[in-house]
Amino acid sequence: MFEIGLTHYLIVSAILFSLGVLALSIRRNAVLMLMGVELILNSANINLLAFSRYKGLALEAHVFALFVIILAAAEAAVALAIVLHIYRTNNTIEADRISALKE
Amino acid sequence: MEMTILFYVFAVLTVGSAFAVVFARSLIYSAFSLLFTFMGVAGLYVLLSADFIAVAQIMVYIGGILILLVFGVMLTRQVTDVEIRTSAFRTLPATVVVGLALGTLIVIFIRTKWMQVHTIPDIEGTTMELGELLLTTFVLPFEVAGILLLVAIMGAALIARR
Image (cartoon, rainbow over all chains, first blue to last red):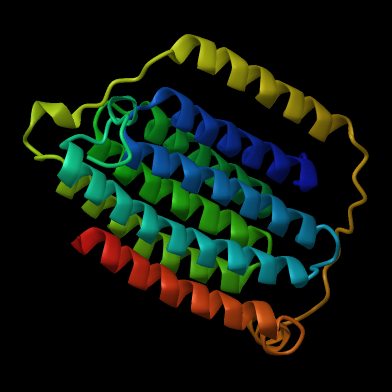
């Protein structure tokens, strides 16, 4: 049948990226927007690894993907701390109801 | 042949559960759909012969980030509360714009003549080569990433406590 090539992976990652952008733009909840960011980072990683595989397994791309995962972990920790703090001061995490940086 | 079937299984799992993440009515459902998205992406990594990254994906994303996100959902809402349902807004224009962008991307991906090498070197897993690369060529970014994680953890603890 159809042999799986680079294009298939690129299309999956494009769909994942679009869904991430959609989550960022239509949902108001800050935690859900974070989930959208994770989707986007995952799609970037699929792209990196797919290009690496179809270049004959270039391992530099794997190092890059590993750093993306590390950054995603750091980003999630800090962003959730900020979200918790905002929830404590504003009593909501709906992004369009938060208009002040400090009380 | 098996690779083709496996690819479509993982691709459908990833994309379908990502749809559920974006459009689920309840935040908890979104968080649990995200679990299947991460699993599907890890499967795609295995098909791309990136075994170490796949394991790292499962350990960091599912074991760490997803747990953090679920904590975020639980700590900012009462679970039994009605307010846990979140609304979407300006769905139609956003969907149209994103759909157009997605169509453009897919057309470009299909039309471009990519240079593809279908054979890969015969190695037993990528872990050893990856470790050597991390501690030789990429040792500086590796150390910087360590410091970044330390600073991020301290910053997160400080912000959340205040």
